[in-house]
Length: 174
Image (cartoon, rainbow, N blue to C red; front, top):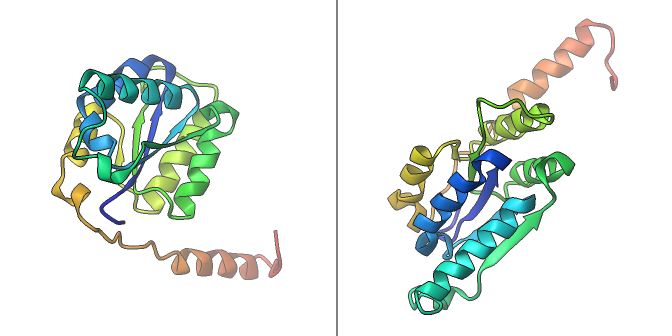
């Protein structure tokens, strides 16, 4: 993980205001990094960052050397965006996940949400699911430094699956 991080920002519909408020508060830090967002969240984040930069009188001079804003917009979460993001995490292309999800509201794609959070934890990706955690992570001195995440070791897990298949008399594929 290098000093210019790849930050994924995801927000459920009734948490988009919270996400945009967080983006607005942290815009000077966020524009120094590459951003990846799902669906509508991407359009809202892009609009917020453009607005904040205009209000500040253009691109912050401290950011100019980094070039233009890098923001990748994926599909909407329930339409495959969560899976796209999960694949990027598994490919070690995401350094930080900020996911404003609503724990009080059931979602038709709850399985996708759980899978995304599981893959982020499995691959040791720093993950914030609320404003306080996101603030702590984004303000960490590690955000401005090169940082090498400890890669996951799935060897024991893979070996356990193979052993279970052998014990069940199914040495091949499932």
